Length: 396
Image (cartoon, rainbow, N blue to C red; front, side, top):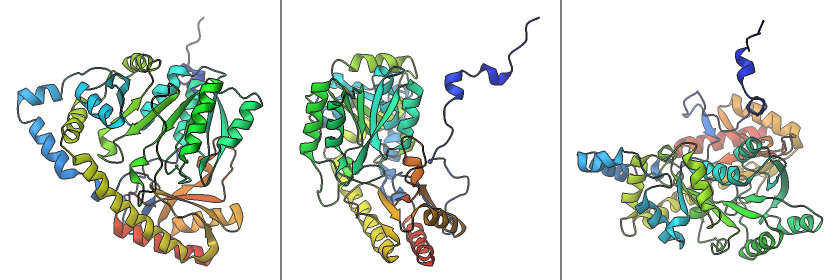
């Protein structure tokens, strides 16, 4: 007699072994003055081009000649006009641009196209945690390399390569790192490219915060003429994460394979979202004007966050952000104080990301750290939450 499988037994062992933990779960409680969330690196509502998106959306859906194509199937690689607009901004051939469902989708496609079980993927330490979830799904092994005040420590990586490390890819967030906020110097980017070309791996540059440098404190990016550089970008931080739109710039050897892989997963990105983005980017100077406006918004938020947190004295140790959306802080007194702070902050109606989420090996490291996202909370909520957090810090 055959015994029927239970429903749980139908789940593949590979999937059932995956971690369910996530620091980015959308809270069920509605944010407000009594509950301030400093978790999400989403854009501020006042930074989004709501009026322009509404106008373009209405025009696109006004009649069958534009509405039909905007709601139709489209090419796997994305709207050719949008790919061309992005390619022109990036200085590459449009054939190297793949439109994706946001940045994380681009990371997943690039890694799934190359990684096999037992391969080694080097990652930032600390790291954007959802990247770890993607690597877990490929079966590859994770090899952390420290991130310091100036980004991924290329000298440490070089020493390990000389010692025999042979990764398939090196993943890093080079501009205003998540969570550290560090900026990788240009000479270190070139050094990393030389290492990639010598040792045969590729660089996966996940760079959503590059547009948000304060006071032009940026660096030239990785050279896209190297066939060892893959760049992931997104419209989530500029046009809004709900459009689920980003792009991947791949070298010629990789581009056909990520497009082929994409066809086998979800076919295409939203044609309507692509049409909205294409229309806005085609307006002369519009996107650059948007970036200039939102940089001012996030600079003001960063300055507010630093000013209020400094009032807590030496309870938090952190560097002032020079761009991006985050403050990465070490709590005085170690993990015990950090845990107490998190508990009391939650009682006071404040939540943020605890440092252990960013340990690539998930061994509980960074328990004495926290990440404060100052980008997404409403301005008055941000102010209230920071003042309450400072009060709690002083009580420690």
